[in-house]
Length: 351
Image 1: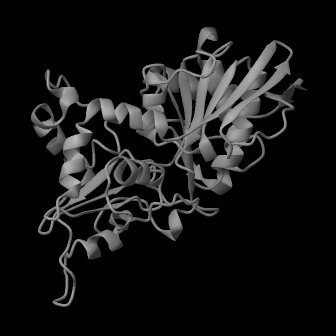
Image 2: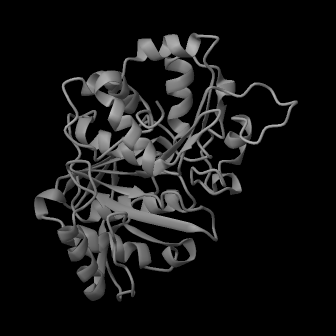
């Protein structure tokens, strides 16, 4: 077992590290400055109560954008130094924002542990790449974003920070599912890499009537197209639509997650979801094949979705309203009644 030591690194504050409910978003060139990410992560640990850090289990993953893999290594080493007991990472560092929420609330680790929070690495629908955007935010034990009281503390800490803690751990392999254990000054520290989709698929099957959807997708009268815009939704699309529901893989567009989102802009609207719009026949030519009955596109971290028909489109801000209006009658999980709308998923936003 690898034994690690903890170092205290002197640092000075950076201006403008004020997080909102969507976290801290800046250009990659800002985040890669020495100590920049480390300052923010340490400020977050310092803003949390001791029981939320020491001995805790935290999730660290995101939409897979550029700099995510480096950030996961930095956060893991800092978590070990600050007394965190376990880090959970989605394979290849991929977890959608809704999936992170589900993992916090629903998942049990191989050693019976439960997560109490998460660092989510995403800048949502902003573009990715060396010259584009990166972001980080903290979610609490309820799966939701840190409240204003916490984000205010984080910001105040960033203005006065003088040092951060980091362990001299080797980089962990986040491409292979498994458990890695290390020994530090305060005991054992574990990093568990798990399948990005399996827990989420299990939850989705408890919410939706998969058999009814499977029958719909098998009907020759119904066709659809789903565009992940090379965001993290692609990590779930094949598993859910093809393997679980029997759809044709040709129904999926841009479902390979990429660090730069394929050079595109992962914002699900008519401007950036060009391939989906073309396939749906909006502005089609006479020679074009008959378009699908239904289409959808997700943003980079898969928590905003546009839906399309042959003669209409619904923006991400309106799509959840349509889902909510039909939830009680169409989604088994909500059959007792819908008490409110605060969180929705890739799958919920797609049907």
